[in-house]
Length: 107
Ligand code: 5GP
Ligand code: ZN
Image (cartoon, rainbow, N blue to C red; front, side, top):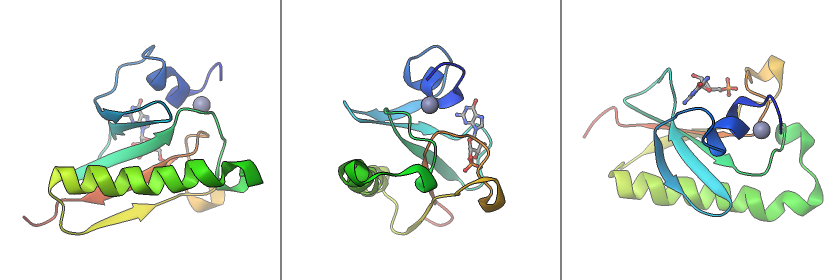
């Protein structure tokens, strides 16, 4: 979507440190990390938020979680947090659905 920050990152119009990518999903480092490891797991399709999910989005939500699990394992995390901020009242600032992957406090 035009004027969407994460669509621009996905389309490589804005630089981000992408750590994993496939046809459906990109995972990149959060620019202002809240943990030693802070990645954003993002569907390439522009979906605004969890509140905007429709029934045909079941598969992409499943893929987001399995991708987070895979990247966490490959990063060597033994435990981690997965967080969706939903809507302004839920702390969502970027209106392109994303799953926060946070970890790395201990090794
Ligand atoms: P939200 O609060 O919407 O759930 O999270 C948005 C996240 O995007 C925040 O953690 C913020 O630090 C991150 N962020 C904002 N702008 C950029 C950017 O330009 N590049 C990257 N990599 N992350 C960003
Ligand atoms: Zn977008």
